[in-house]
Image (cartoon, rainbow, N blue to C red; front, top):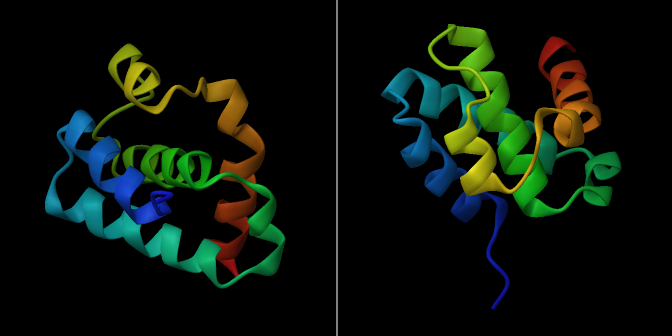
Length: 92
């Protein structure tokens, strides 16, 4: 069974010790990405990592730490394109 992006997001938010606000914002970003066909080119773990990154950036609560890099297996550079695409969706 392949884990969904929500499964990955839950784990990443736990690693980030995210608050309810950050979790809600990240989930919102993830849900927007699921509604856009262009986003299917990204792996579920990458989309979840990007949503987590945006939540931390939006609230200013956390950055892309070594802990998040470890749990997500994605560097800030590797999620940049996905982050940009999700940010575009949020701003529409």
